[in-house]
Image (cartoon, rainbow, N blue to C red; front, side, top):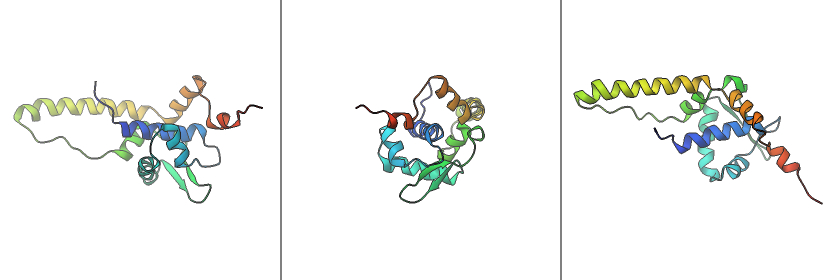
Amino acid sequence: MIPFPRRLFYAIEAVLYIAYNAGAEPLSSREIAEKQGMPPRYLEQMMQKLVRAGILRGVRGPHGGYLLAREKRRISVADICTALAEDEGIPASTQLGNQIVVPMIHKLQTAQTVQLQETTLADLYEQATRHNIRKSAEERSDFAI
């Protein structure tokens, strides 16, 4: 199996968390990081890249945080991955590598890209709804007397 970078997993989960839980009010990176069990500083770097890519919108101030910059149906998983991608190009190699391995890698990357482009945030949101995953607002409203 081809490994999936942890950084991309966290970024996709963070954007989905915002889509699933943010209403009109932004969600703080501290809350998102807490839910994901990761350091806020690590998450903040990813969030800034997502803002620059036009996936998220940052809101400043004491009640600031992040909101989606576009509709869920207009954000693909590929958009998120592209925003965080670091160009690690395929190295020049031997004749075997260049003529056999590189085309095989390009074919795999193309198939992966097509799948990621076809999967939108709206698709993931609907899956979360079908699985009855509680929203953070529901968790905060639970209390016992």
